[in-house]
Length: 322
Image (cartoon, rainbow, N blue to C red; front, side):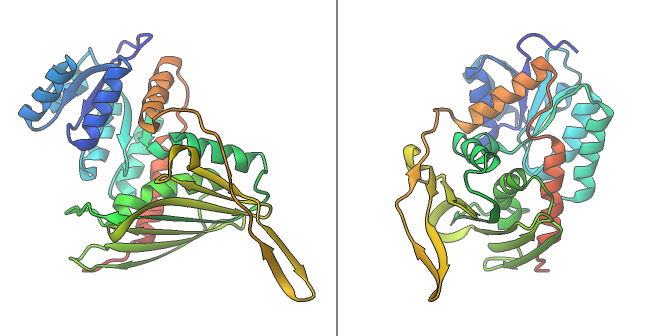
């Protein structure tokens, strides 16, 4: 397989998110082909970007393709990712990388057998400038000791036939929480409610980490308003990554005062300090990172092992409504 200075990447899956990947990779000059089970869909997208439409089964043996982005219904991710790695292709597989721990481990094991290949999970919010800035604040001790992390990711829809709200929505925030703590949880407790069918429309996860951090994740696809908020509570300050807020207010730091006196615990609220962020779309930055890892032989920031860690939490915290 050729690995040129600018790798040639094919997008497999031409639905909503695959279309976004194709557009982004085309803008970056790295899109070589697209593939989809629906020939008409693949043909239309290929024509739009001036690249080849390739049959799905043919991408693995195509010498004109160095890497694959897999943006498929998640039940197909594991088999396709393993096939890609066995065929010698670099792979970025969208979240969730599988629908079971066993399948996710197959992907990780296949990647371990081909260490020269990039095997990356599509945890796009890890590449958001606001989250990267939040990571830096935590690493530099700006918030003090992190005590608690909670996330709210709620809205109306999408209603998938296979995925509940937890599996569809929570991987975003779990990937962020795992990055901030640098640990896997020692205790996971889930709660869910199914309103429309047997799949949870509301889901809660409570996590406890070995270093003492505790966390709560709330997801809903049956909510009248949209919220995308991650809050980190530290011993010296608090920070909020609000992805619905305007760009210049997406990352806020609160230096609230908290003290204890003879009357008990007291607090004083202050206005937030907003962190200045560089421009850059998360998906563009993620694709640039994938390209750079292929070109330079570097380890991705979101390896498939990260995807496995998220699947393990989802599996342990899922509530069944059979």
